[in-house]
Image 1: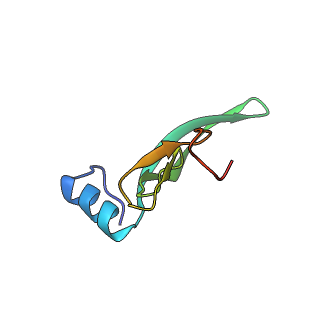
Image 2: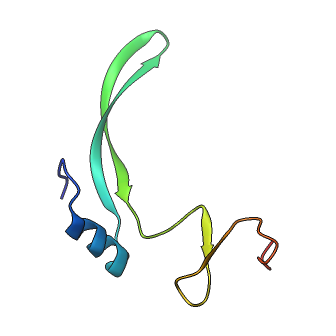
Amino acid sequence: MLLKTITHEDYIKCLFTNTEHLRKMSVIRSRQHNVYTEEINKVALSAEDDKRIIMEDGISTLAYGHYKNNTN
């Protein structure tokens, strides 16, 4: 279901059910000097954090490249 707004319930649902929420976005693009608009679906909310590593306790995080991170 695509809507124009994101509610607090959407945040809670995303966090606890690990589901992504998509929203429509209009973009202006150009290819070979032809300008056009396009409507695309983008991930608006996601429980996954692609900037940090979530530790075993499920709460603590470390940045990628952190010296305590053993997966480097």
